[in-house]
Amino acid sequence: MASKKKKYYAIWKGHKTGVFDSWNTCKSLIKDYPSAQYKSFPTFEAAKKALDGNYFDYVGKNKSFKSGLSPEQLKKIGLPNYNSISVDAASSGNPGIMEYRGVDTKTKKQLFIQGPFEQGTNNIGEFLALVHGLALLKKNKSNRIMYTDSRTAMSWVKKKNCNTKLERNAKNKPVFDLVDRAVDWLKNNTYETTIVKWETKAWGEIPADFGRK
Image (cartoon, rainbow, N blue to C red; front, side, top):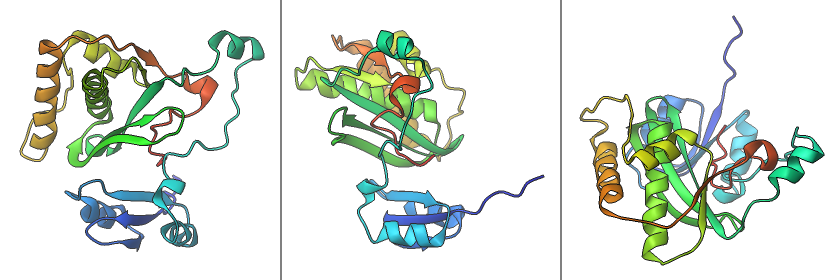
């Protein structure tokens, strides 16, 4: 069996900053730190270079992307609607450390971010990001649409229920507190925002992607 490739973790914001060669160490240094900033790299040199720069130059950037779809398929799909926001979540493990955020689709300016939370799942994060986005757009009386790359989260929002199999415990209480608030918001509010599936195969990673893949 092939050995797992080693990774190095740059932490820009955390209980301690620097480059670390263990995910467990990185995890302990970002746990419970509001809006922690971190990313993995394949070499120590790459992580050190990134640490000397700006976090947002390395995270959330769409890598060089070339669609595998035919010209006819791309024409049918068209371009993204930039009068929109995009949301996404990231989870290191399932369950694991989870966070979510929303950005302006065109400029990638961050509009909100929550986490990291000690124990969550990607699906829960995607669901929370959508509801957070709905509440923000309604509050601002915005006519923007909202993009997500998660059909699961879209279905949960439509059903007004977070249908996760994750069991509640002391570690994930902060996550489920947000889930309960989100479900309550959906059941007690109406909204006109259109939620649209982001076409990853045509456009690349969603602009809100954390870029940690």
